[in-house]
Image (cartoon, rainbow, N blue to C red; front, side, top):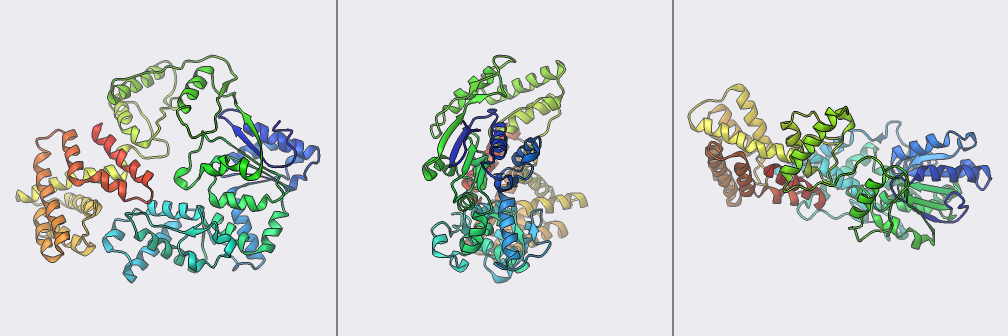
Length: 533
């Protein structure tokens, strides 16, 4: 039925392993072969570059399908931007205007410098800036058409019904200031970032009716894969291009993974109602054996906010699916390590073995079990737990306390120890927030490194130069270093870290000081898992 769908809107629910790419390309092939649409006027798209490549490779078997347009949604947005620049609807772009690598951090650095010069953001906030968190915040704002300065954008009335003013995170009000400065610098340099491909593409279409009409006339049929992962900007660009109504969205609300980037399930779930679309389901799973399919159905059924459907096993029984229970996380991790070792001894390479977890915060206990068992491993897409910033910073406190204890005993630090003290100090002096300026923090470090003065004493002395609120924080930190220097000689590591975490209010700080609650909660969960392991 999906392959035979000719015209009009359609929504396809395709479960994992259902062969949706096969269905999509066979539909495209039929539409071209039967001359329902000119191949040059069919657009196949997805958020995911890999998905677009898979579709393109599958279409290569039919020469008459080679002219079919295959673009990621970001590439589509940028194509609109380039077209607008060439036709004079916006300033012409420099050849190197597109910045999708690490250049965007240069915008953050420039925005931070401007914030310092203009006194818009407290220096201690800028010193401790989580650059990636800010970039994520800006990216999600742009993907959901949230402007740094909506009133200054000059959008037409119709566009203002969709666009909005960006809100600052509750605990990070200055993120919005940095977003504004980021945009000021970006526009001065004439740069277009990854997220601007979508925001600018949408903005140009809504500003210029002639441009919009040209793009609406470019394609007669749209097929969009992985639709569960689109954001507002992508959804609205596609909506404008699909005025003809020949619009098929394919996806699975059980497989959305980009909520942290601003994707919203509402666009997928509301597609049928918005467009009056025909609804198709692909429920046969050709990838897995019955055991895995049955287990997956039982797990996903616990989610009540989904389109009701069940995977149907199409490959029969085979392999082994075991459901293990364990009395606690440590026992579970040991069992995982034993299973990995057994699989390796049975002839499987380590590269053929995978351990899946739901959250990054669940890796520490498993990593420790693998380390203990001397099993080589890597964390795909992330660093080992002990190198993640939130954990590395926590561990710098005991190290710093050790140097402070050495100075209090009258021993001078070696050059290497001095370098480590400075590194630790710069990482944690405002984590959590103590409103200590960079200048005063450097004075404290200099007292320790040049005068051999204990850092705890330097903090007390520094408190005489600041407000009572800041002085209280410095006294607390001095007391913490003295306590920690003694406690790490008598307390086991687990108790020491748990009490340190509690005294600092570290998990609460991490939860609140992030652009998104989910991100902050993830950082805090990583620390909780590390302390427990």
